[in-house]
Image (cartoon, rainbow, N blue to C red):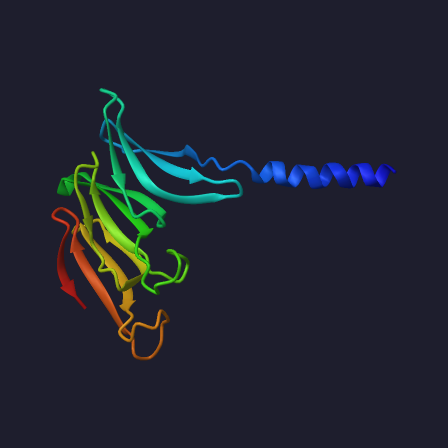
Amino acid sequence: MKHAIVLFFSLWIIPVYGQDKTNYVHFNKLKEITGTDYTIATIEHLGKMATLNSTQLLFINTKTGRSRQVDFPKDGNISELEQIRIDSLQINRVIVEARTVNLDNSKRIDWSDPYQLFGLSVDGEEKVQLTPDNFYTRTWGVNRQTGGLVITGHYDSNNNGRYDKTDKSEILLFDLKTLKLIAKI
């Protein structure tokens, strides 16, 4: 009898848990932008079982209380967010690495889709996509002497969603001050 009661309540709990259709918005990642009045909040949409996506950034002016939201595509996700501050070159940018395009035309943006890099101003007013949609970013780094952003990766030239012999590897060089492409190597 004891087992029957436990089984009854266990079966009753599962449908009740499944009834919660609410998605919750969660601001759990804050990043101060040094040298400015701004802090960035990463907005995550939480479902019943896991994080659905983190596709929005909220730039909050901590002096005035004003905020500016920067959106990315719904199914995308933000992987990395880093401030690049080089005072000697008057550079203060935010670089965001995110998956924002469904290149393999599956149901949603997932691990097989490429990362893109975006350059943002410290107040969120300016957002520039640096890497093309079909460029698979591997690594990136900053030369603090010149203010150059170096990005390595490859183009999926045969559009099969995999890295193979026909794909073209490239290095992209950007000027962080202007967010303009300087060279393809």
